[in-house]
Image (cartoon, rainbow, N blue to C red; front, top):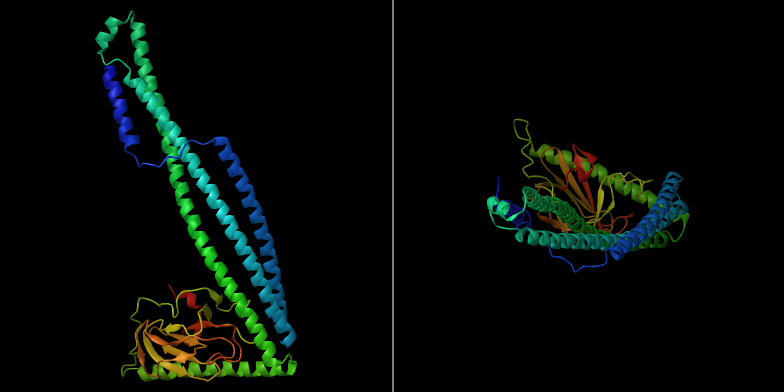
Length: 412
């Protein structure tokens, strides 16, 4: 049989190795647990209320989307186009309100998680104090051998009671230690959740700024159309005809240019001299908010053509870089019309950079991935923007064997 001292030492050693040597947490001062619980409950009610508001705005946004598609499917008139642009502005205004509420909701969630962390730390602190009191009781037990204890006790029963007492203390310590481990694990998860919420808050704030910038562009675009057409249906139809012709000519020129440059690069054995030697595409402009997606159903000029690209927000005159290494097949400077650059790559891929305000490369020139090829544009009425544009951005197309495909399938 073990001596009481050995049992006590084993217990203390177990606690030191599993608890005292575990990661140290900063404990908060004791607080009223009921007050914390009440505050957490109050915050949860506010969070739920914010969620309800967001859902209402989401319903409104869906209604504006329906209105946009309805007007897109109707006859292409100035009136229907203005309805599309107006609904688009209203949709963005709704998104701004929803994002602001989401920011408020996330701030509340951060407060709630912070309180839960404080509660967990306080609980650990209380359990730590209780464990210390148990250790003190064990330390007070006799260090004598079992024989000495038998001789000093009036009966075997008293001796067994003392042995059982130390065993019970040890059992209580193990139970409390198990509870502490559980609370610690919850605390670690809450800390991770807190960091995640903080990152989410950063992204939401960025999203809000992007939406505010988008609505400025939308209002400028609407004003540009009204000014350009002088609110005349006849002038609007004339503008549409020019825009359609411009896009059709650009597409035909892009297809022909790719065929020509690839034929020129063919070797005698019939294999292309151009290979895709990059690890993948890089973003042509700094990765940013996408204002229009590939074949975007909400694209304001969908009734004119399917959007064959993604539009990446970029300030007027931002640096444009080659997404991959290749040869320049087309570098069209069209004055105030639609200006663009096209590069062919290996693997049947090619890229188009539209609404450029400046071109820094020439046809047949080899460019390396990431090399500056020009500057972005897109502001209505500026060089390279063309007849119809939605504001400053980078219009980026990816084509596979001449057919437009979704650039997001290739971008990192």
